[in-house]
Image 1: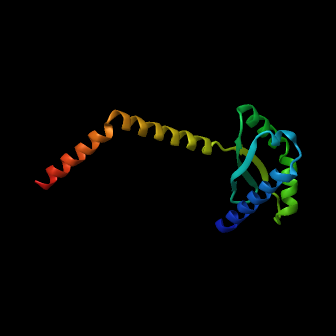
Image 2: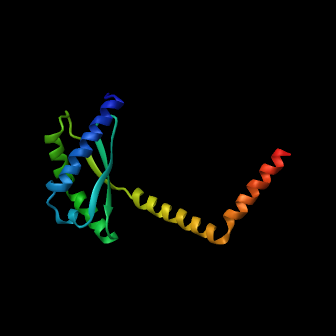
Image 3: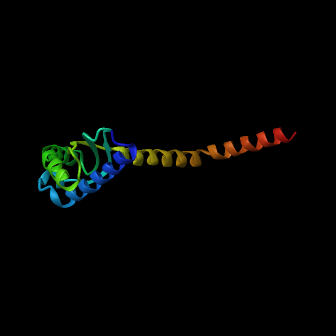
Length: 140
């Protein structure tokens, strides 16, 4: 059984190679419809399966086309990984869409909107007054 360190190194190597393939190796036109990047790779403990998380920038239609292109290119990606990465057995490749960057952007937008609403409604002034009142109560 490989060590955790080896699994992490293999995952990093797979990430590097698949990123390179996405830039120049995959000829499927559907993969080029959205801007795509590999965000993470998780390799199973026995090195038999690799989940490749990809972030796709574009419309929902471009995302679905890109994922369909990646699904059809899994055989090519696995074959190329077998050539580029020295392992006894090449892992099965599964592409998973990663929307965490999109969700993060939404959360930052919500936080900014709440901050603006607090400033406009005077909530911050009230909170500062409460904190000052608590400090005075504690000093007595």
